[in-house]
Amino acid sequence: MHAYDFTIVVPHTKGSLATLAEELGREKINIEGLCAVEQNGSIIFHLLTTDKAGTRVALGKVGYKVTREMEVIVESIENHPGMLGKVTRRLADAGINLTVVYLATDTRLVLGSEDISALETAWKETAAVASR
Image (tube, rainbow, N blue to C red; front, side):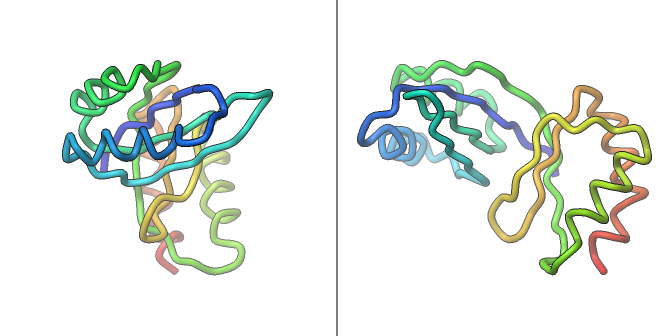
C-alpha cells in the first residue's frame, strides 16, 4: 500500500497531539500510523495517512508546518523477534537506503526511501521473508 509520511515539528506544548488528532478526525482523515518524539523543546511527529491533500488542509487549519512529505510503502510483517532485521538486511543488500522506518497500526512496516521505485522493487523480492 502507498501512503504519505508527513514530518511535522511543533512546539512541545500540552495538547499539540490532541489538536492534530482532533482536526484530522474532523476532516475524516484516518491516522494509519504515528510517531512522536520530543527533541530540544519541540515535538517531531511522523504522521502516516493515505489522503495527501486532505492532510495538508488539516495541518494548515491548525497552523502546523510540514517540514518533509514523503511517499512511503506500508506492508504487513510478522510480529516476532528478528523480523525487522531480516527485512532491513535484505533491503540494504539490495542497495536501498531507508530514510523513514516505523511501525504503523496492525503490525505494518512503514518504509521510505529517496528512490521509492527501487524500494518497491526490492520489497517485492523481500516480501516472502516478511510473512514467515
